[in-house]
Length: 148
Image 1 (cartoon, rainbow, N blue to C red):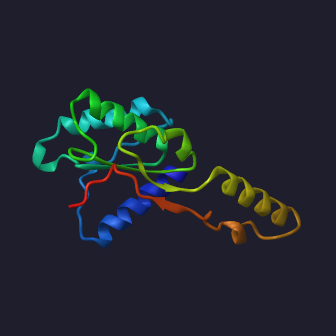
Image 2: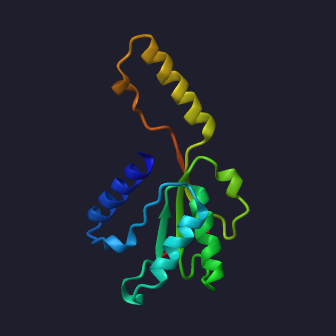
């Protein structure tokens, strides 16, 4: 479900900025596989240059790493040729990426803490709907997104 929430947010953000979405830009997968994100990039590279994406948002850091690897295989430079941003909770595992990954980051410890607090409150009689609060997160500005 998280991936679909990311997709809905992407769609809303694009609409807020008046940018039409080509359905061919959206690549969904059923697993958190770096190879699957690489497959998305290969499909995008087959598109006419005029409609080819120049930026990618991955719903996890592992997928972003797959985009980096596939871009390199095709001689593309991040961010010169492809900007990459991710959403994830394991940023430290991908700190080796060059240039540094730009990411919205929610630490795993915070995710776990919120999950336990919510569970205890629900066990104690709280309404589950009251505990659908977003986990605090922060933006890490790496070097993987090109300014236009």
